[in-house]
Length: 224
Image (tube, rainbow, N blue to C red; front, side, top):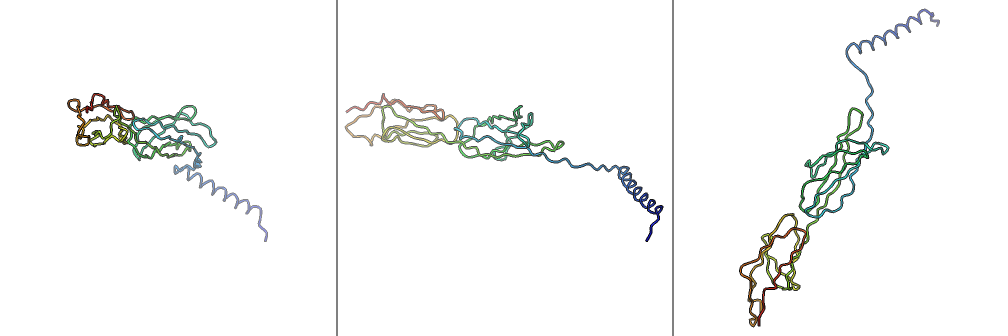
């Protein structure tokens, strides 16, 4: 079957005009077709957190880099601990942010999350990094001088007794200032041929957590 050149040109012209009319109608209706920006991966890393001593303030150090390792400077980093927002910082020219948490945590393990909100306008997505923060309990020792076993102390509302070496070993889970009180000696625990002379009253001392304290009992005389 033969198709005349005039009819073929007419059909092509109609098709082109139809496509042009569709684009014009879309533009007239205010629709703008633009490609969606492709996400550019960002990397967020929390430096390993070493166990923290009770009473210290932890510092969270994070690294923010682009897809191929280039640092991303001057960007906000949010820090959450156990789901609660605690602090915020910004990356420097190296893509590093060092964020001090001005909180004294009790002993235990806490979930730390660093969040980079991203920049949607240039396709940088939100990124999250997680780590565990371990706070170790404080080990405290009370010494009697000279070493005296069987001495009772009241510490944090509990009573402890010095061992054969005259020492009381304690574990404390919460930072703070605690008082130590020496309780009267149980005279029945000593031989009846010995006479015990004690200072008047009891001794109370402030004990900073993480330090040792020696309670001097040298003025306690054992006389035969």
